[in-house]
Length: 304
Figure 1 (cartoon, rainbow, N blue to C red):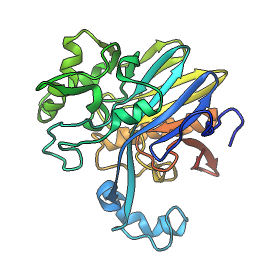
Figure 2 (figure 1 turned 90 degrees about the vertical axis):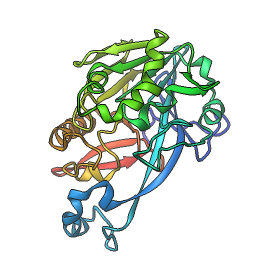
Figure 3 (figure 1 turned 180 degrees about the vertical axis):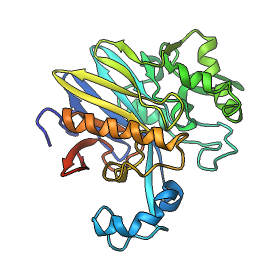
């Protein structure tokens, strides 16, 4: 592990299967796991099934891999503690949300807030919620059900929302997901806690900025952070598993525009390999965070 990024030892901060903590300059970054679940390879990467034999030959996949094998995905948030601020990147699925389009996300009961508290933050201590995009598994804990009504989970926080993502809800294509807007976005707008990030991105706090990375969704963004001369990149759903580092042409079934998503992914991988930034994806299992390196003309993933 690089000396400027270190897992915080148990004596310094609690570690468990639901938490993994890293230092970056003056910042402490902690993963808060909401849930994990397996998906069949053929479900996550349906267009890649025909490439499995070639991927096995290149040792991207193990020799006993088949299209029916499952890939574990994690749904988690990243808590940043820096300069007296507590910042949450993405907010997972949430509890009690009606999601009839997905049994994985429908009417859940997960102890996310207890895990957040175990990491050192209660809801009223969160200063900012930064959202890479507005899919159901990234906005759910924006709100919680209180006396039958959806209220902001983080009463003091500013919620930063990509403008293009907001606008998408009011298009014909976005109409079928308006329930996400109604229960997880509208309540924070009504309390004047929403801040809209323009489509070309920009700095929201000193050293923390949004960058356009469309394709997975209409206005998907990557969030960067600089501290102590080092850089971290919260990559959202630009990649769903480390397989897409080695095979960036493999688009997930959840991408709105696979070709644009691949272009955004390649740009992210090139920048990550060039800069040595710590990459913190939204769904990678295991330690979740790591580095992108070059292997000849390809890219490789290395966990912290």
